[in-house]
View (cartoon, rainbow, N blue to C red):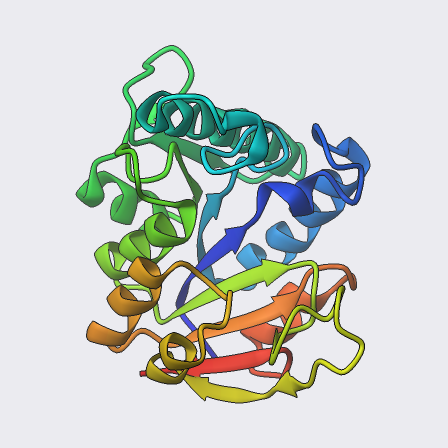
Length: 234
């Protein structure tokens, strides 16, 4: 259904419920799923979060300078990106990590034209270090990169199976929303993505699907057009 997609993976998801660090077994399963989709001819770019190591807005950073804390969060995403790259390459596919913060020994610098060329050659590209700027989340980085590479859709894989009226982990009366607009997300104050990311997608008419990555095969199913999770449109 789609030719080029951007997949947003949260750091917490890569921890697979452990709270901290990377669950190697779960990362390998995700890599196999991504490889299966890539072999079908779909061009895949990935943005990874770093919340399983450090978040600039988390409690552990409450007394830190926000800029320093955000830089630590960006470096956390690089750890996750390298772990995912290793798992993907073990499936026999080529994968490139491109970092918004220069670290030549570990990753390529992010250059838009080079990223698009990698995708055209059938390589999987992982964007690390967010946007490279403090005060911007990896959700905003995912929205920005999706626009820059001309992705057909932004896929956000989370631990829940879509958008709810409130946090389903805390509220048993939370109701799932199958379709919603970006403006409604802002008006209702739903914690789907940060407001900057939501506004960026709305202004550039980027379609987004939020779905659960807990069930094996969901990435392939949502790319194939199966109705999973929640659809967000401008």
